[in-house]
Image (cartoon, rainbow, N blue to C red):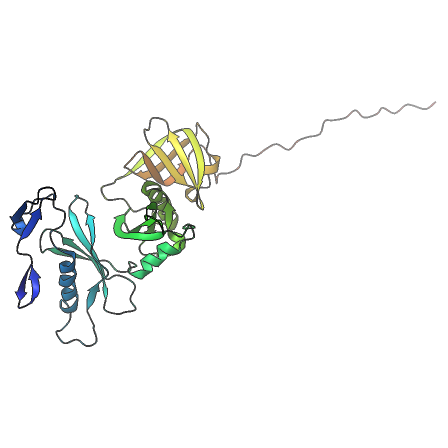
Length: 318
């Protein structure tokens, strides 16, 4: 790093790569660093740059009130974007010490001095995120939250947490997923594996009315077919139905909240629904059983009639 203004304003000037086995050192210009190096820009330098940006990009030089100023939240997180490129992710917030939500998100290129700001208000940040994961009632063993990362999942800003043992070697135990705009311990989807937590999360979004969001790269499709098998399982407070449809190589899931017909579905019924393509297990966003007709005019039923009896014949008197 080389200062650009006296002793401050460090700028990346060259990169040294050391072979851990041989000790060999190679020098590179920043633009020539091999692509397999996942980070070149130091995290602290990124924080410094965004701190200055937050202070002065939309505020006057002399600004005692702090109006228009922003500041980075926490340390930069190393993530991989949708084309598998490493980036630093840094949430930004206002200069108010009481603000616990974001003003936007920076994605900073790890190889060069280039960043993009995405306005995104209302995302929970800071210690509020940590306490949300720690407070969920599902964490009955009181595991520690060791890692927090922000992603967009099913079109929704989402925090993902890793739970580890609070003692010993701090081994991995569970995964937590929560909507970044609805931070509450009761909203945390807590499971031993990421795939299970994401499935719970998708069901939760459907219940909240967010199921219409389409995952990046996914397309909404419709299916009409005959039920081969159907079974229900209990996931937390949700009843989830797993459905196999004739001619489909995908297992479909549906939350009970989608339709009151679900408990009545039987093999042989004709069903239809919309879902987001991707994977071997997909979640219905809409559902209907065409075999079960509700709301029509009921078929009249004949009233039972009594069996006519034999009337006694009077005996004439003499």
